[in-house]
Image 1: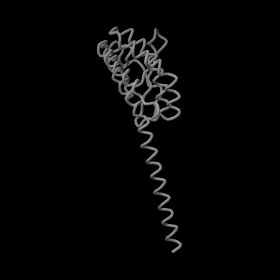
Image 2: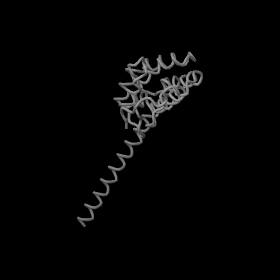
Image 3: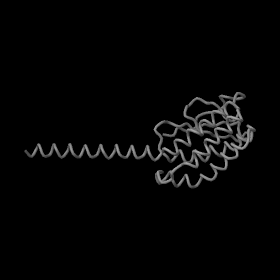
Image 4: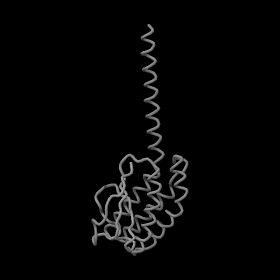
Length: 174
């Protein structure tokens, strides 16, 4: 009888631990919904810049701006919320500038700081899939610039077809 009670207690404890882990995983996924939408819109913008398409970049940036404005900060975990608050105005400003022009050089200039600030948020938020932080040494007049990607293959948003594969992965965020 004593062994049966111990077995039941261990089973109950294991079941409770599993439930807690599952709940934490679901809660974490829900807290990233807004950030995931921002990242998805950012990737659309990056892909338009890779194609050197100023019109598509402008449109993608409008989608990005909407995603930034729709982030529900009460759903963010503490670290992500703190970092979001530090950069959200800069993210909005860069997205607005990119959306207001079709001039690709100006769009790429703002994409540099947009990428830097979004990286700071992505770095502290949890992601279900790897996100690659990539670097082109030629961008920004030879000072270099970074961007985020969902694939480790380099597709350079700063030079498009001129130097499509110029760059490297400098960090994998998970």
